[in-house]
Length: 394
Ligand code: MG
Image 1 (tube, protein in one colour):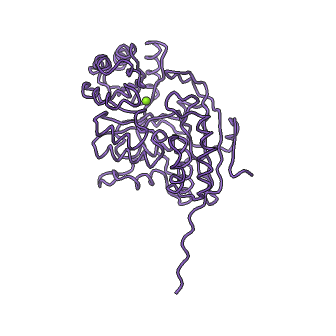
Image 2 (tube, rainbow, N blue to C red; image 1 turned 30 degrees about the horizontal axis):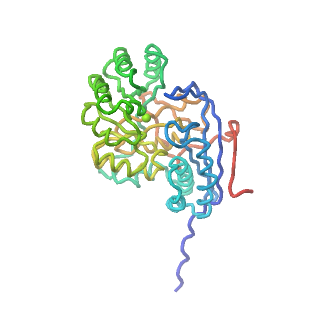
Image 3 (spheres, rainbow, N blue to C red; image 1 turned 90 degrees about the vertical axis):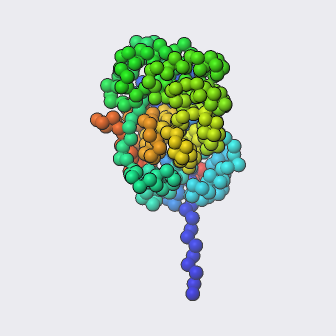
């Protein structure tokens, strides 16, 4: 009797990095910069002859998180790609183990593992959303079924003044967005929220993001100012204090009626465990890149589901590659609040994929169900090419 040969593991044979500079449909004004285009890092891998794609969420400057485009490219080239190719396996777990000695750089790692997973799923004709559903422990409730679409939401950038803010929110509401997020900071909070509420009424799902800007005030003063928002029916207040201040967020959360949501503070599954144990938040904003990849994103989702804490899917100005990933993630059941899930046209004149996400008449966006991430990169993506590298060197 002969023993059948062990199945050959899928082989990772090639990795390519594309740095693109893609024009934005309109300037994006963050608290620290105005962007007219986006430096996008796409990763393409070949596993058993099948190409998979991933997108790195890092931005040009290290102002949202420590990662930034040049840093992500450097760590990919010097450390992550050599380890992944040295391992040679096209299994996501093996790639993650090979990269594990490299500390930090969650977005760069997520781009690479996301691409490997996409190739692996495409070869098996399985959609990313079906894969995530199988991975999650929170999807096993008998009454739950995978939704075909998820509610949209939109983040409004920093506005030049109250009139500009109200105009911008109005434009997004007219487009059909169900939930709006505005930026706040000390001195631009109650006034801004009151103006939006006065114009659009209490029915608009409205939330605010402080990007840590109340941290310098200390918890007592932050609580005093943010309590003034409790009468405005906000869905949540996102990241009022500094990234590392989980104890402060716990103290603040006890003093506010509005749920505190954490974004920048949750850079790993362990951070989510600590935040939940401390009572530092009533909601978590999950960004796949920020927590290091899809397995971590699902783990944070499941932890929060078990703790009765809802999550929503944040955005990092993704192209259609990262957007398709976000839509699949947001289909999981504990993503019970609308995410920053906007149509492609919100950010791009032309997207890098052939099936840009569209806002449906009911205010939702369809979850891609094709193999892998379910979208294809356009053939002439090189039109925006700034730099390309491929490994092994040919
Ligand atoms: Mg945020």
